[in-house]
Image (cartoon, rainbow, N blue to C red; front, side):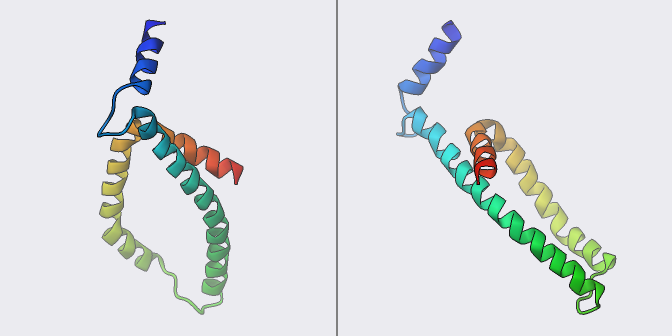
Length: 108
């Protein structure tokens, strides 16, 4: 029980950068709720857009080749990996963001 008392004491007292720790925990949760909700809504639009893109490419109105996709992956792949590593580095600090994202995604 001593561990829980220490954690509860840390959450309810002191400050981190001038803000109470509870606020520092609630802000990522709220941002996660908003981002999860928007991601769920945008996923529906992205699926419809992908289906339209495949149909247009099938009929030949739009050129979609593996060579061009490989070229784009070569250009933007390292940038995506850098941002992925950065995200993995800050995830342990923002568990509330992940929980908020999941709740916002499921409840939308």
